[in-house]
Image (cartoon, rainbow over all chains, first blue to last red; front, side, top):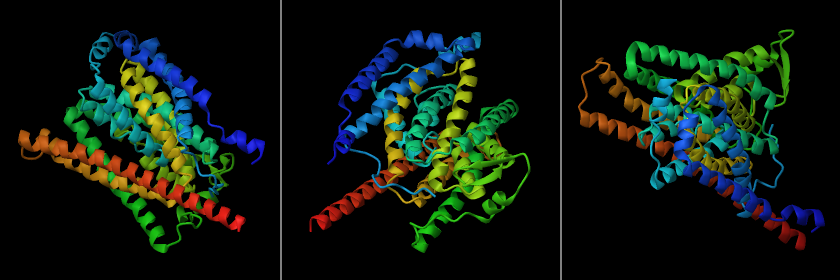
Length: 85
Length: 362
């Protein structure tokens, strides 16, 4: 096995932990400030950007985390190059 | 703005059971969406409403979880070369217009006939669209299965051949998923219909994906992946529209997103293991089962409108619960087919690798 192949197979432990911590932190913040969030996001108008920004932040950290999570469990896409057409 | 604050006070109390329930439904929904490009969201609005969430807040929160989920799914599937971003954006823009028009139709029906009229319209749309498109998709998948030619390149339909042959100067655009230049004008009605359906039954992909396959000539895998781009474009616009009125319950949206991001990654990976016709199988099966679920609700709404004999409270309750159970079953069955196909694909690949290893050693 070449060094490149070995590097490719390395499990993403550090990114998993880092994004996992941020993701858990975001969910703790979400669930522990429910009243504040409901009141602020429920105002509408110019506050309409808040849900969109929040969704992008969650999707970035949690999405990266879930990707690494499955890789760590050994669930990955097929190694075969798929011919789509 | 006052009604907005009143709406905010309608945001439900969340406990551990609610959070777990939404997370799990989100996971299964994400799994199916990652695989067929959409289809996981239709169960989320009723699932939230079953917890006491007001209808509009449920629709808005569903929309808000959908676009970041679609974004992650699209990025994942783009890595496998399955996404046609240009086609997704072209269809997404007209779909956005369709969403606005669809919402306008909904509001007009609600004003004229009340909640029951609006619900009847949604249920009949479900039954008609899923009946026609679902049976067509399933029939096509069955034909491929019977022919035993599941690995063969997908043939494009006569309509798609015609669409690809029409030349309207000044409107021709090359799309990589079609490997052809088509007039951008053809994408407008298709996107618009996808948007109207998204605003009506929450799953535009039930029209979007089949139309890309059968009308434009895209391969199933690329059509389902490109649908994620359309869902993203539609979702951002739709969320903003609802958020302007303070309808989005960000807690619900993010909890469902929490589960669905686990699911969508898995569903997207699943597409690399299966034969393309499996996309049609999963989509067709879900569509046909959901059709029965919604058909059960038609008598309830007809009765509420006084168009048929009034149903007893008991009968209404039974019909509602059965309809919801069938809907959950449809999603669970879709998820099961995806996981099973993925599991079989992985095992076959591992066996092949092992055989190669043994062969090379020998």
